[in-house]
Amino acid sequence: SVEICMSQGVRIASTPVPDSYPSMSL
Image 1 (spheres, helix red, strand yellow):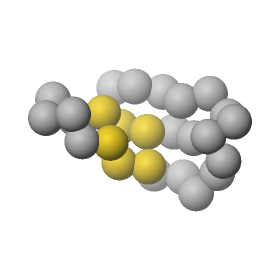
Image 2 (image 1 turned 90 degrees about the horizontal axis):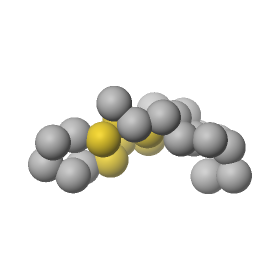
Image 3 (image 1 turned 180 degrees about the vertical axis):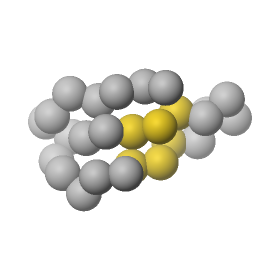
Image 4 (image 1 turned 135 degrees about the horizontal axis):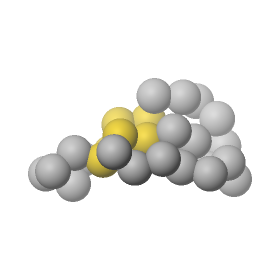
């Protein structure tokens, strides 16, 4: 799933897809 990693370490999943998909960290 596409996730946005904040500096605080908070992950925000922008897509409701399974974690089997590659994740993108910004």
